[in-house]
Image 1 (spheres, rainbow, N blue to C red):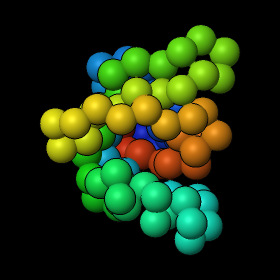
Image 2 (image 1 turned 90 degrees about the vertical axis):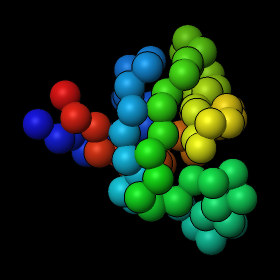
Image 3 (image 1 turned 30 degrees about the vertical axis):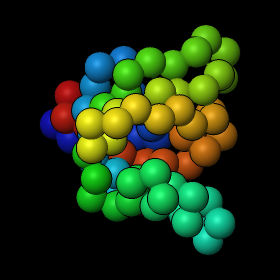
Image 4 (image 1 turned 60 degrees about the vertical axis):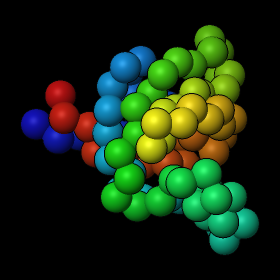
Length: 79
């Protein structure tokens, strides 16, 4: 079954496909520069406790995003 959830709700090690980014043009441009856009597969590497940064793997490179931006990225995850 495929679930549509925010990136922050993914479990560590889980892979999902970005389906929507609920943010303005500036955030879209920043995420595009990092390789994050609709249709891209991402793997959640780790997350800090209590709304800390989320570390992702995109195209073999790791990047960290703040909790607020990570919560605006919606992904499809098979569970």
